[in-house]
Image (cartoon, one colour):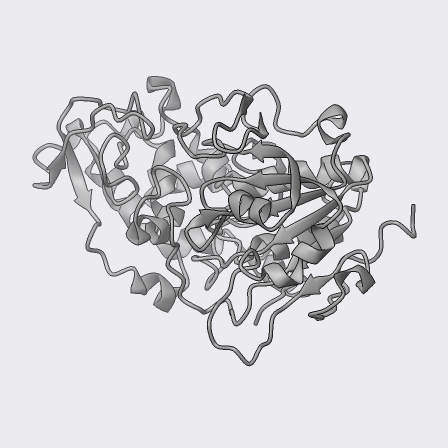
Length: 408
């Protein structure tokens, strides 16, 4: 067993004969080229390794090479894909946020699609029995409560338990230029937060995989045999605009950069754009009439939000569609000012964090990750005071994170 699971932190940069690499290797393209290339785009670095193997793929609509899905591209290159595993929103991305997703057969390829957001989140021994290697190719957005890193963890745990290797086709993190937020308290572990990381974790999927292994965070302290195809010519400061929406409600570059901040409103009695074409970029509620001039009316939108909070009611609040998201790059911080402001302006403060009012609400403690945030907002604490309570955990995480970085 010790020989099977070698040190996943040992990164070897090679471009030929992948079979000759150690069992946990990261591979990069020629660094002299300036064009950013995702791991998936560098097919010459991994397709030879997949040939002759029965391949499972964890993919969704962000899994693309050019204008084609990674699945379609690799099938054309002769890769034997036997199973597809789909996370939240499904393989083709036609399921709404939080909606149960069933197993199905992909109509285009005829390959069975096993849902990891339905009956179970972890691939079973039976589902892994007919594959030799699992490929993970999903675009993340760098936030703890975005569920795809949880899917990664579940896949790694299942593969480790069943002696299957995971090949990670890494992709840039559009919010990878900063680290912020409190460290998740284990008391608030949930489907939107499994490990003690900050709200904005500053890692690519490949780097997070190394952290899961290196910190012994997989169940039973298993080590998953991983191989990472690095993004070529990428740093954490590289601006990256996603070529496709990572999920139905993150449908603009603006929403992706606002998401680490505005998703926290899921834990409040406010609509944050669900039921509109501008999710995560507008925030409001009917009760704020007279406080704000900007208004919007959430409606049912199939594939995005069928039953949004305050459906068919006029909401008043903040319009952040033209907010300068460059401020996040300058401050390296999420914006707590909007939460503080909206609470102060709320006429029904007892309702603000009351998740019993609607099944469309989440729990603020699970989102932010700590118990004291709710009381800090209620008590009128300043952003500076709230941030002070995140230490020393945040600084310790930043130091620990450095061990697992693949990019400067």
